[in-house]
Length: 80
Image (cartoon, rainbow, N blue to C red; front, side, top):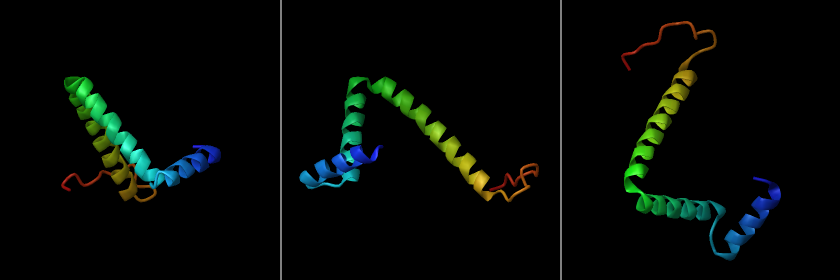
């Protein structure tokens, strides 16, 4: 986000008695509700795809964070 857009967005949020973060949250919640109502079946299908992708990315980041330098070729402990 450009600095000008952020400054304008923060100003608009202040005028509404809100924070930029709360406005983003409100917008996100509204978009989710609209899409759930528009096509519930497709929404559920795409949500499950997104959940699996999110979990795979999270697991990969955790695994990478737990590796020490040079340990990329070592076999990990699959018992965790």
